[in-house]
Amino acid sequence: MTMNCDEIRAQIAEHGFCVVPGVLSPQELARARAGLDRGVAFTRELLGTTHIATLDPNDANIRVNNLPAIDPVFVELLTWPAALEAVEAAIGEHFIISNFTANIALPGSGSMNLHSDQALVVPPPWLHPWAMNVIWCLDDIDETNGATRYLPGSHHFRCADELPGDAMDRTLPFAAPAGSFVAMEGRLWHTSGRNVSTDRQRRMMFAYYSADFIRPQVNWACCLPPEVQAGLDDVTKRLMGITPMANVRMGAGLTRLQNNP
Ligand SMILES: O=C(O)CCC(=O)C(=O)O
Image 1 (spheres, rainbow, N blue to C red):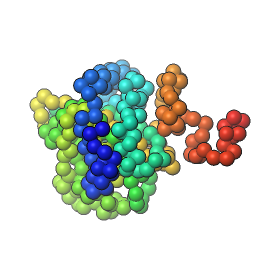
Image 2 (cartoon, rainbow, N blue to C red; image 1 turned 60 degrees about the vertical axis):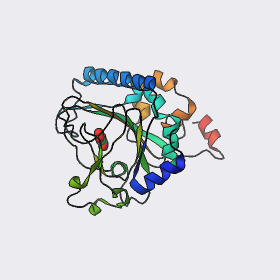
Image 3 (cartoon, rainbow, N blue to C red; image 1 turned 90 degrees about the vertical axis):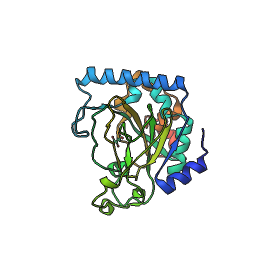
Image 4 (cartoon, rainbow, N blue to C red; image 1 turned 180 degrees about the vertical axis):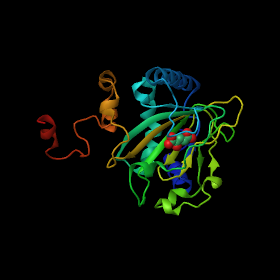
C-alpha cells in the first residue's frame, strides 16, 4: 500500500476520509472494469433498468447491486488486504461486510440526497466511526465528472440536527486517480456529484463495512448463489456473516453449539 495505517487513521480522524492512490495495477483495474461491465449487463437483463428512481434524479446514474454475486473480482476487492487494513484502522478489528454496490455517473447525472452512511444503519447519537466505505475509483474522479462530494467536518456531527441549512452548498468534491480507493468513514455526510462533463463516465464502487454489532445492509446468505458461497474462504464467509456464528465471538461452549445446532 502507498500509505501506512497510521497515516490513513490520522487523515480519517482529521478529515473523515483518506485517498489511497495506486492500489490497483493497470491489469487489476482492467479486470475490475470488465467485471463492472458484466454487472451492468446482468442488472439490465434481470431488472430491465439500471436506474433506481428513489436514489438518483435521472437515469444517467447506473446502479449495480450485489457485486460479489456477479464476478469473483469483487470478492477480491472486498477482501483486498489494503482495504481491510484501512477499515480496521478506522473502525477497529471487529467488522463485517455490509454491502457492495456501484454507482456509475454518466454525463448529465445529478446529485442524490446528502446523507451519511452510518445514519442509514444505526440511530444517533453517532459517537464513533462504526462504519466505513472503501470507494474503489475505476476512473480518474474530479468535480467535472461527478466525484462524490463531502461536507467538511461533518464526521463530527452526532445527529442530523447539526447539519447547517446550506449543507449542500458547502460540499467539496473528492479527487482521486483511477486505481485508488477513498476510505470514507461512515459519519461523513456526502452525496454524488453532478457529472457536467460531455464524455467522461465516473465509475465508483462502494464496499461498505460496519462494526460487527450492526446488522449488515444486505443478507449475504440470501444474496449470494450457493456456488459463490461455496467458493469463499473462511475469513470471507465470516466477514459476510455466512458462518453458523453471527453476532457471537468465539469462546467457550460455542464449538459445541456450532456442531449441534
Ligand atoms: O456515487 C456517489 O458519489 C455517492 C453514492 C452514495 O453515497 C450512495 O449511493 O449512498
